[in-house]
Length: 222
Ligand code: DX5
Ligand code: ZN
Image 1: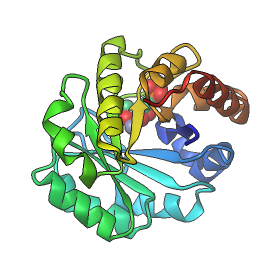
Image 2: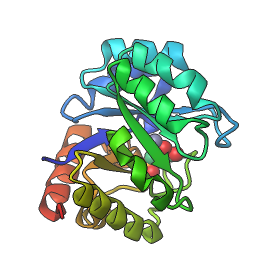
Image 3: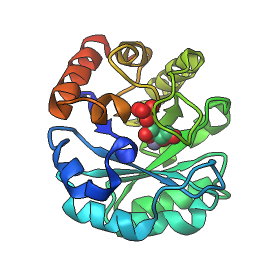
Image 4: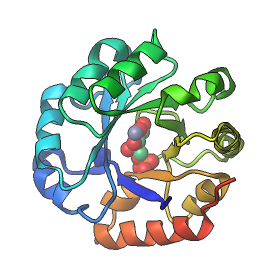
């Protein structure tokens, strides 16, 4: 499986979203961060805006829910046509029910872990999801530094997916740049979210290309 680059529109110009989406047409996915000012100390946008993003985006939409009640709100994003909907393990009350609902609505289901949340309690449920998002910064803001202390968790997640023989993607989000992407890829990540590294570049397509080449070179599967 090839690596996937998912630029995050958190670092885009929000008043020109359609134009900003056009800049990343060569990406594999577009990552959309939904924040409610409760689960994280920041607020972005909700379902009505994401519905329009899904309609005009040139690539599939990867929704990252940083909200307190994903059980209630998550299915609406799947109904709207999100390619994947990722909820936080710390927030979901019934993660298996939610993941099944998202999949039944035609979306992929992802489970996200804050840097201090271990993956081990979720390993028996890997078959219920399509992706594990290992946060490589504390969620809430773009432009933070990559936390190297999350690399062992990326490795353990990749190893567990391999041992179980499952087709589950490992995603990393936060501080992914030309300086850090190879470390994450070498640890076993397959999907790389990059906000400031792509939208902060003059030429977003060139940034996507460079990140993809670096990730491909370092990527490994157990
Ligand atoms: C942070 C968000 C990220 C953010 C990453 O909580 O989940 O998706 O956009 O931004 P960078 O790549 O700038 O760290
Ligand atoms: Zn995110």
